[in-house]
Image (cartoon, rainbow, N blue to C red; front, side, top):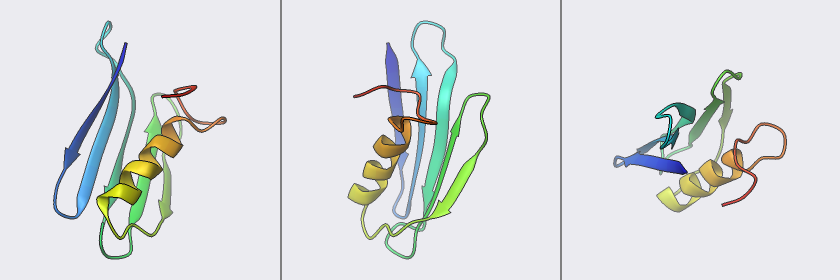
Amino acid sequence: MNVLVINCGSSSLKYQVIDSETEKVKAKGLCERIGIDGRFAYQPAGGEKEESEKPMPTHNEAVSYVIEALTNEKTGILKSL
């Protein structure tokens, strides 16, 4: 089973997806400057780190970007939620 771990602050959101059986990190990332101009980072285990500027007026948008990255057809680690 995959577990999504989220650590939210007032203007940031850190996340990891962990395989609960092996305890290995499958992906991780960070949303920064939430409420300002926003920066998003995503890195699947063993893959290239992706960074981009994205509008994040609230934590809702940040969570949406996380889900979008994790389920991305090309670089995502999950087929669906």
